[in-house]
Amino acid sequence: MKRRLRLFLPVFLLGSVVCFAQEKGGESGDALAVWRWANFAILAAGLGYLLVKTLPPFFTSRTSSIQKEITDAQKLKRDSEERAEAIMKRVSRLAADIEAFRVQSRAEMEREGERIREQAATHIRKLNEQAQGEIESAGKAARRELRVYAAELALDLAGQRIRARLDAATEAGLVDRFVGDLKRRESSN
Image 1 (tube, rainbow, N blue to C red):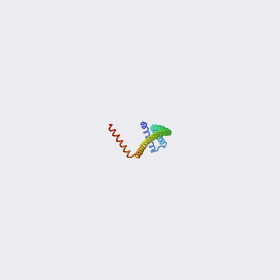
Image 2: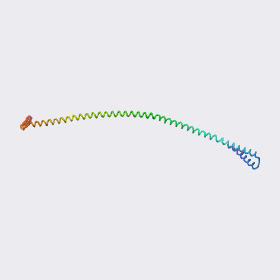
Image 3: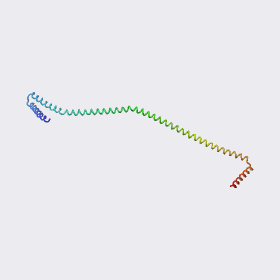
């Protein structure tokens, strides 16, 4: 490139100087136009060469970066579609999971209710047995108290009858007999 630039630069400068000299010298306009066209051709060739040399690598790198970005965008799109699909699967399974949870909860509630009913029945049965035992115990105690009361009444009644029949002479005879029995027992020992 430097070599070509070295060739074009002197020709370009020579053309410019000739054009300038012709304008000052007053030569015809056709010769000036030829030099202007030659100058334009050299300038256009130089610019064309520079554009051909620099633009393709620029466009190639730009194209590759755009293609890379498109590839990244497509990958990101696929990833987001996969995530959206996974979320939709979870959402669709959510209704089934909720229904399964409801069924499981109902079954657990029924089992718990049955267990509580069984415990309550067992507790009621124990309370009935305990109450029955207390009733029987209270009945026995009442019968015992009734017997004691009846015995006391019988003794009181017997005491009243004995006192009614017993006079001083009978009482003295009973005391004498008792004392005599005590003496016999003492002598026999």
